[in-house]
Length: 108
Image (cartoon, rainbow, N blue to C red; front, side, top):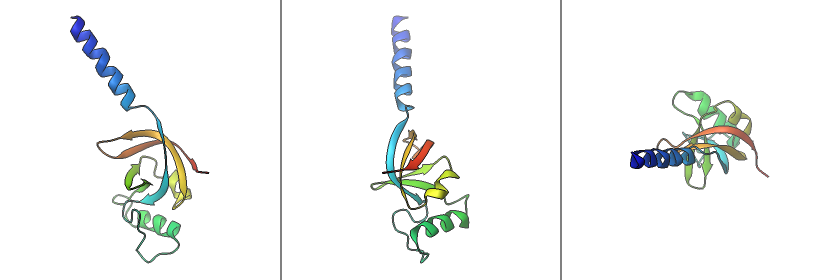
């Protein structure tokens, strides 16, 4: 009985830690172009917006952090930050690479 309770407490602690909000700094991009905006649309912020508008069910706003790209759960706020460096506070779901954004703001 004690083992079962201890196991449940341990599992709950791991789950709580996994769902803890973190802060990520990167550039708002789209899942079509990623780091390389080669669609021939300039400047880059226009390319990001146009790629997402082209097929919003297929292409999404994402946060590029180094070589990692995370799809943002909020698909409205990133539009105003297209191709800009931002700070996103939220929860990253590692398996799906989805970042549940609680707050998006310009990075300094």
